[in-house]
Image (tube, rainbow, N blue to C red; front, side, top):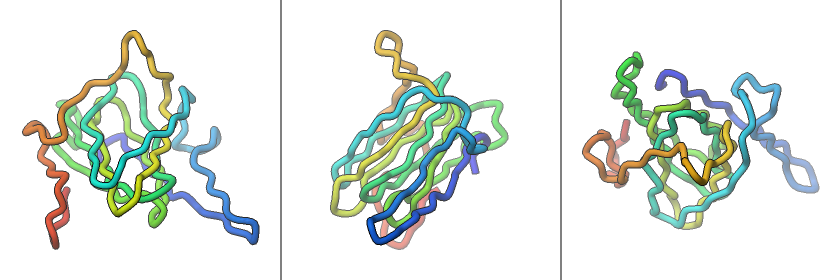
Length: 155
C-alpha cells in the first residue's frame, strides 16, 4: 500500500426497511478533519484523473455502481515512490479510501451504469485558489493504463 493511504471496509447493515452504511465517522481512526461533502458521477467507461492535492486529504467511496480507483505515489521522499495501487470500489465492494496530500489519484466508472462517487475531503474547495493539480488520464508520467486488458491485473 502506498505510504499514508488508508482504507476502511464499510459494513452494510440491512433490515426489513432497507439498509444503512456508515461511511466516515469523527471517531474513526481514519478521520482527521471535515472540509465538505460532495457527490460526483461518472458515466460508464469515463475516467476522471489524474490529480493530487498539496494540502487536503481525500476520503471517498463509490455509493452506487462500481469504479476502479488508481493511486500513484510521485513523492520523492516516500518509501513507496513510484508505486501504483488499484482498488475496485462500489456496491460489490464497499470501501472508503483515504488519500494523503501529494498522491495522484483518479477513477474510472466500470460496468454498465453511472457510478456515484461520494467524497469527504479534509478541506473545503477553494474557488479562488484550488488545491488541485492535474495530469491527463493518458500521461506518460504515471505507469498506469486505464484500459481493461482481459486476463491482466494492473498495479
